[in-house]
Image 1 (cartoon, helix red, strand yellow):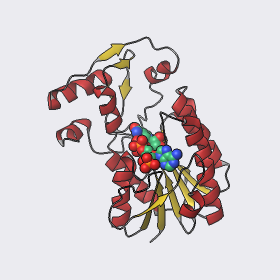
Image 2 (cartoon, rainbow, N blue to C red):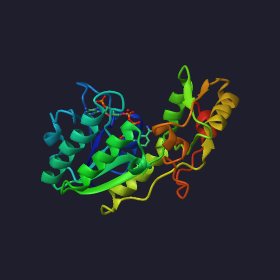
Image 3 (cartoon, rainbow, N blue to C red):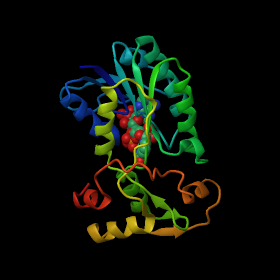
Image 4 (cartoon, protein in one colour):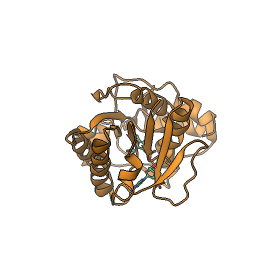
Length: 250
Ligand SMILES: NC(=O)c1ccc[n+]([C@@H]2O[C@H](COP(=O)([O-])OP(=O)(O)OC[C@H]3O[C@@H](n4cnc5c(N)ncnc54)[C@H](OP(=O)(O)O)[C@@H]3O)[C@@H](O)[C@H]2O)c1
């Protein structure tokens, strides 16, 4: 079994992933900026900040694998993604650890700022000299729920998503930990491609909650969403559906 550090181990994906790694018998470390993060019994918390690099070498030292899922789409986006990945990759290279970076489907052909930061981080990792894997996944159900629960959500005509259950992504990541680094792994997509209107309608049927969708023209990066560049139509990997996720009350 391996020693595995999960950056972003306190986040949406990390909270699903850490228990699976522990169940597989790995020695699991969770990186967090918080002083006393809540981690599952058996995991060890490491304090660190990928953006500043503080605590990263110590957390990575002695690891076989780093699953790099720390990210901040709202603040210090580029620094966190790019400089953070540089810091994680440099520490992994020194430690001889394999870095598995969690990215997003379509980042190599998308104009959305956060996705451009993800692509820049992929390149940093690829050129770092560390053993690497990039896993690009489609949007998590939690993100779709956040979109639809917002006061309004801007949608272009025919905007579609292929959302996936983080539990499925987490389960797939455990297989990548156990195997040699493939470099860019095949995309990982959800089981269905649905329009935002269908997603909102299913949510209304199951939960009674209504979403407010605001039609906008497909200009700028919204054109890339309208064109479906974030979709992986050849990769229906996750098995959990949006309806099942909603019915489970998550
Ligand atoms: N959400 C989606 O739909 C989706 C789809 C495909 C891929 N992804 C990718 O999957 C990864 C995980 O996403 P998520 O939705 O689980 O994210 P999340 O819930 O927002 O969690 C992000 C985590 O990053 C940590 N973090 C943020 N800034 C940090 C810093 N400077 N130093 C150290 N840790 C930091 C936070 O930990 P602390 O607050 O404890 O420090 C938090 O646990 C991301 O790389 C994302 O791009 C997401």
